Image (cartoon, rainbow, N blue to C red; front, side, top):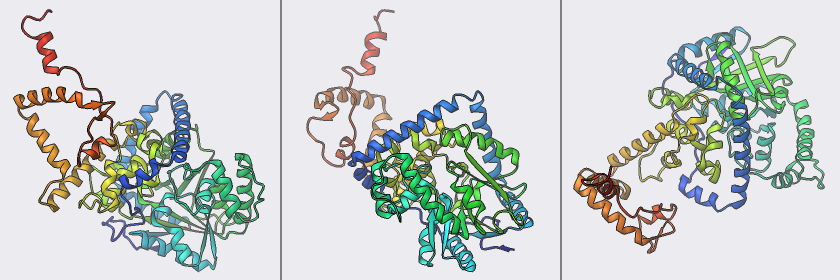
Length: 501
């Protein structure tokens, strides 16, 4: 049986999901930068993951060829996405599954809560899923009187701590083990107050707690890393085994999957199962790779539902320049190398998808306001980057994140100019710079003036604090030491008439 709430013709969605917070990135980042413990936790964790990834990637002689293959496969898939989704639906249905189409978060949540309610269950176990976080499924289930139990260890820590994930792969990356111990003692039923903060001890406590939940659960909710259109098969990769428990023990399995996760064939899946573990956890292969196809009598869940989620994805698909954001396989490699993310963490982005990929994906899924710059949290996300390019260098499917950030910045500026007669201070400054650089004489005089200005700078800061709006630039940046002579003067002295060869 198929419920068509959003037909596979991929029309633009009627609404959007639970993607953004309320504060702009600059506002949230200032608070995060003041948290020294957060910065220590993030610095240690990201450095560890980077080193592991570099080691296992270095073992693969054809790594760049794999990246090229992944990028090409994703581009080809997006070009024929409607066709592949219909093929996936037909094969899931032929093998005893049920497919539902959801235009937005509200429709997806209504479908899932309705399916759970129909079973009579008052609780569900969940596999770690970015899609269900995106739509705010846990909150929707709670409003319907249904308890959702996160079973991934990091997600469990976040849930028990009444917190939000800060990383795509490691949601509790911002927590130290002493903090985790305190959360367990305070929130986990039946935990001994003498619990230590040794990792093995904390894992054992979580395992004992979750085992009871697994054994009584009748319904499970998962996401999907990939779906194979060729056979209607779904795949989930994970490191702890909790996913395998959720996917096999309950009577009913409900999977919420973004429509971009489909791949044409099993041969295509082979490429991504090589790229993903090395890029995400720094492992040669995932400890648990679970695949299933429909329903098998007497083995595993006897009722399977697949909810195909749009929630803004057709908006992105329609943009030829922006659609590469949909290529993301949620490895989080871009977060681990980003100097901005390492210093402020995921919460500052105000989005389910933090880091460089979130800075391009969230604005495209839910749009840019283009008002004053802080009118919508998405407006500031394209600026949450140094444009160093490290994110592109590690992306396993070669998403041109820096290029998209620049393009989104331009779109935001253009939208602001259309909505306001007066330019921003930054826009006025850039126009002034453009006027100076457009004329050789003006540019030469500006160079000589800049050389004189070096006397007003000490240790990268102006001797006399600059007034707004210039203070906004200098307060967070150190100026490099200016040279004693301009390039033009150096050229005239060393390459001009009479200079030695």
